[in-house]
Length: 172
Picture: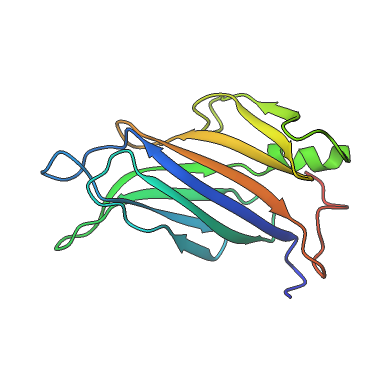
């Protein structure tokens, strides 16, 4: 295991909402590229759907809590370059601050933190961090930037890994 890794992050890309139309058929074939540091992951393509249901879980190794997760939505094209359909960033710091509180044994569904949308994040509405089965999950709706419309519904969940540094001693 790479000693520089702090831990893993599960990113669940649930769905897209009202994504931009990029095909002549008044629809799109969206997929998402996820970038964090040198990692690059991709969801599957959803044909003819501006409201896709990916329900995909991607696992990212996190080395720096200050590096945001960058999501870019594309429309898959067969004979030309794929069209960009917007982008959003996930700032990990508000989520990871929940771990510094040192919570244990809360009832499932307990709200640990509320994160408000503002000009520096991509949140479309209030995002909540919830205690679920011994861990904290942040649920969010991200408003895509650099596009006329569209949102992504996602969740993140931290995974401590034996042999990794973890979050203790990290200033968030």
